[in-house]
Length: 293
Image (cartoon, rainbow, N blue to C red; front, side, top):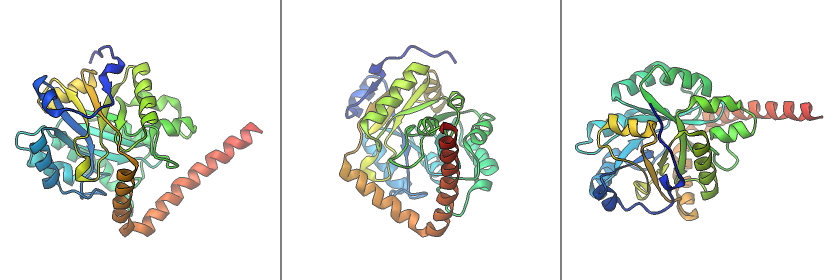
């Protein structure tokens, strides 16, 4: 699809006025929200009730699982629900996959993600970034690099992996775009992601990365379309805006407690997965040091 010109006005760091956006003919969607089907604290029913009450659409993007997304789509009523999943690649990046139909989402999951999940189902699967993108390209979907500069010391962002030379810079071209406002990230890394998306003329989205009901709808991707196909087409062709703000420190800590509590049931396999990932990173780091000597 042809891509339109972009400007920083298309990414606005402010609290979204959902009522005003509707008056302007824009559909607002929180493109990154987790439910209790993975490591979130909120049921699908609860978040859909808030979405109806306050006026925004939703993409339930649970980690390596689609049951929450499919439930949301089935119970959507007049809400715009974008079927999708956040896939955790073995080599680090988290990949947001948005599908034009729940059938394609389910087929992608059953064929490619479910067989490659590990003992801690919400952490990294056995496939790397290249393999995941290769397989996603067989479907009608939009692929977005979630929180591209990662979380703190964790290697969970595409651009952080590229900067660390764990992945080649060419891999970024395989993605449709970047998440430029992630509510759980710091402001400066969101700005970096926004500027790079502009420089590369890539698609861009925003979402809360919410795990609590209070998060939902605080970062939204907006487009002048109210159908699933039209909305994703608008994102793919950069006919959208992203509006929202990052969470404060206390709410980030609250989210962290919830996430750690949910993951604690898989403590042993989670430790094994993290060990495997970090051994790979450490070997790469040692090779880089040797090459510099």
